[in-house]
Amino acid sequence: MSTISRCVLLSSITRKLLVDHFAIFDALRQININEKYVYILENIYQNATAKVHIDNMESELFPKKRGVRQGDPISPKLFTAAIEMILRKAELKHGLNIDGETLPNLRFADDVALVTEDTKRMEE
Image 1 (tube, rainbow, N blue to C red):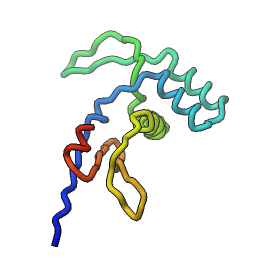
Image 2: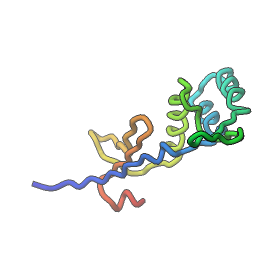
Image 3: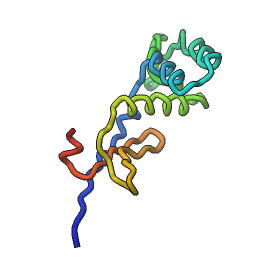
């Protein structure tokens, strides 16, 4: 009986990943979202601002150039589109061979697991 090793790199850094708004809109165009909808989203995000709340204090408004809007129903879709483009551009070469198909990663919500047959390939 042989032992097959597997290597999995779990990443929750996507929670902290703040993708530039331009990259989000570029990703939408690459997956052929109607330009009219991309334009609407660009207008929504164009002058986005945020403020930080700590205890009873709050900061001044500042421009928000990265990330998606918290609580907005479209945000998970925008985040998913951006992550998809990032992983495509990463051109992951290795993964698990399942019935002749290579599975380089597993994704659920904002978690990503990069998988491969061994640790040396993970380093590549």
